[in-house]
Length: 406
Image (cartoon, rainbow, N blue to C red; front, side, top):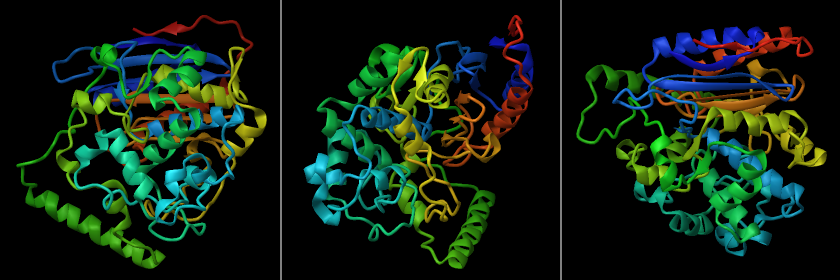
C-alpha cells in the first residue's frame, strides 16, 4: 500500500516507488518539490522487522545524506556573517591548529580537501564514534594524511565532527540545538534530527538486513567475491597512482562490522556525517530552499552570494578515496542524472536528496533496506530519472487536482 499523493504529471514517481518496494524488503518515502510546490509525497512498505507500516512521519537513518544537511546549516551561518569560507578553521577553533592543521580553511573542509579522512587511525573501535566530545578531541589532535594540496579524499565519517565541531565553536551552542534553531524551526521541518531526542524514537524505522556480523564467518562465495573486488580496486588505484588502503582508512574503522546502527544509542548520537534521522519531506524542503535561491515560503536563510559559492564546483579531480570525479561543491557532490546544475548528497543504503536550481526542483528519498555504496544506490538514480522527465513535462500553471495514491 502506498500512502500520500502525487500531482498527475508525477504519477510515474509513484510507479518507481511501487517497483522498488516490490523488489526490496522494508519501506521508503519519496518527496518531490517543483517550483516551490510539493508535487509528490509518498510512502509505503514497513519500517521494522515486525512489519509495522511506514507512515507519513516515519524517520529513517540516512547515513551520508546527513552531510548535505550539516553543510546547509553551515551555509546559513555564513549568510549570517559568522563563517568565512576562506578563513582558517583554527581562527574559529583554536585547538584545531594542532598536528599541522593551522592553515586548513573552511572551504577545504567542505570540499573534502583537508586530508583529514583517516578515521581508522583516530579510534580503536567504531563504538567510540558515539562519543561526541571524545571525537572532537581526536579531531583536534589529528594530523592530515598529506599536506592539503588540491587533492580530494572523501571524509566519509570525519566530515561530521569537522563541520559539527566548527558549528559549535562559532555558535557556542550544541550542534543539535543550532540545527533546530537555524534550519528546522525556520523551515517548519517535521523530521530533521542529528542526535534524535528520546521522544521521537518511536517514529524511527530500523534498518533491515544491516546487522552486526560478529561471530558469523562469511561464506566461501562471499570471501571469493570480496577478494575479486579487492583485486579490481587495487588495480584501479595502481593505475591512478593512489593509495588502495584509503577507502578502508576513511570508511571502515575497526569494529565497524559489529557496530549496531539500530541501537537507540546510535540514533541519539551526534554524528553529522552519518547519523541523521529524517523524513523525506524535511530533506526535500531543505533542498527546495537551495533550488529556490535561498528562500522558501517567504523565509530567507541563504543569501544569493552564499548560495552561489556553496553550489560552485570546487574541484573536478578524481577523489583519492572513492576513485570517482565527484564534482565537490561546498559540502555537496554533483548529481549527473539530475542535470549539470544539480547537486546534493546521497547516503549508504540508498537514501539521498538533491536539487536542480535550473528546474527549481528538489528530490528526497529515505528508506531502511539495502546496502548500496557510500553515495547511495541505483534506486535514487532511477527516481531522479523519473522525476526529471516528469518535471520537464509539468505545466505548473495548469489547474489540476493532485492524484491521491491508493
